[in-house]
Image (cartoon, rainbow, N blue to C red; front, side):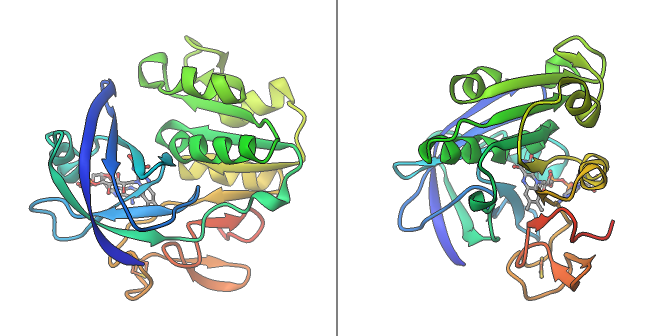
Length: 241
Ligand SMILES: Cc1cc2nc3c(=O)[nH]c(=O)nc-3n(C[C@H](O)[C@H](O)[C@H](O)COP(=O)(O)OP(=O)(O)OC[C@H]3O[C@@H](n4cnc5c(N)ncnc54)[C@H](O)[C@@H]3O)c2cc1C
Ligand code: FES
């Protein structure tokens, strides 16, 4: 973990509630499933965000505007500086899958983009299941389609299959041997109940973001664990919901 300064390269609205911000960074390594903790003006606590993409020193975060901090971030423009804690969290373990399924719900699809790129770099094209509430909230479909086999679902059926991320999985039955899921808690709980052959990336309200305050602890079959330190990625069968 270290504190660093990013420079904003672009900050683009992808749909009414989702933004893509690209930062220039230097001097650290990042992998899919890890997160950064951003300092936002007038917010006492830093705000955690998954890494959606990372190449050549450019780091992309996809964020949904839900409150004070993410609203403030929408005003960041090219050339602005942002302070961030980096190298946080464990990240996904790619070694488990020969034939990966990546399942995302809502803003939880974000870290799966870098994960999909990492699988492609290893020579295995993933299947990516993207679930959104409606077509308006969808994003990155074209980008995922260039590197993965994409399956879509929306709650109202206006894009792809009508139903949630697990209904869609049960309907299409894509071939896979191990899954990686990120999304709202009910989705992760449903995936874990469906099969424990996977990893899930959890969210929690965070204090310090690096393991010191215990504020993000969850219960697992191996005792309490901190989402920011031992997670945010856990074995699906390990989490006690
Ligand atoms: C490891 C990790 C990775 C994340 N990755 C992303 C990402 O890639 N993109 C993204 O948009 N968001 C992500 N989040 C969630 C993001 O951190 C919060 O949405 C953000 O901190 C909200 O800040 P705010 O000031 O706008 O909202 P606040 O004013 O703090 O809260 C607004 C609402 O959002 C809820 N909320 C705030 N933080 C969280 C949280 N951590 N978990 C669940 N609900 C929360 C609050 O309960 C409240 O209802 C991630 C969270 C974690 C822990
Ligand atoms: S946020 Fe402080 S220990 Fe996880």
